[in-house]
Length: 284
Image 1 (cartoon, one colour):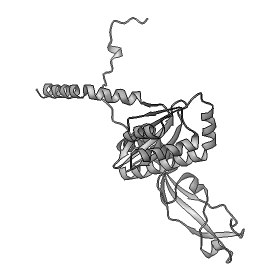
Image 2 (cartoon, helix red, strand yellow):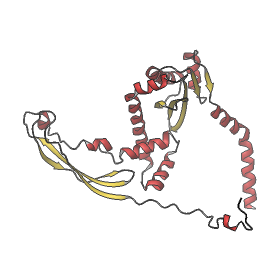
Image 3 (cartoon, one colour):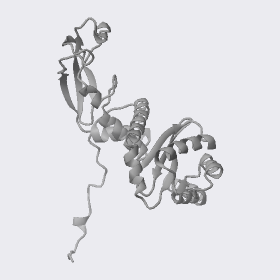
């Protein structure tokens, strides 16, 4: 045990929060060559066509001013030549959607923050700026979170067999349906298997009634199999769907949501009184 006669060394005198330093972005000017030499349709030679104007591509690390070289087919009988179809390096589509500014690494991080960590759109804006120096607007966050949702759904569809085999090794399955991240009239619903932690389905639903919830759940059950137990957050549409369509599956209200709502019901008035007392004390 350490012996001391003073606590001075253990007290931080610089207690005021420091301003967060926004990371500097690295800017690059890149020219993406097209290395393809022959037409994929008719196997005729490809020749230079045109070079695009620089466009901004934002990744987590770089602001890239990207110029793309295009080629075209010289065979007049080829539909690609007749339509004057431009051919560019397919690497472009591996990292960014056509005519979009933010690369896939930014989109997937954005989706992770919103759908996994439950960040608000404003929270995502602040995180990307403070952590990566990326400036993004609220409409863009709203737009790209839908793209991230579509990517996640496509990934699930492409890995159905792998996910199903993983679920089949479990002693039992507990699926949870959680409605979160409301956006005006739409709410994001996420289905997870609580034993494995795997996300099995995501959807932005305008309606929350039992028929809409039933249709969404049936898609998940058809794809991955029915659960042994079903847990929900108290969504009325889910409760109604469980009572009408899934009487053979035990349904339980999520303990976390139950305790959260119970605490709010019991302590809301006390919190209001405490806030009033604090304000009164501070003002006086």
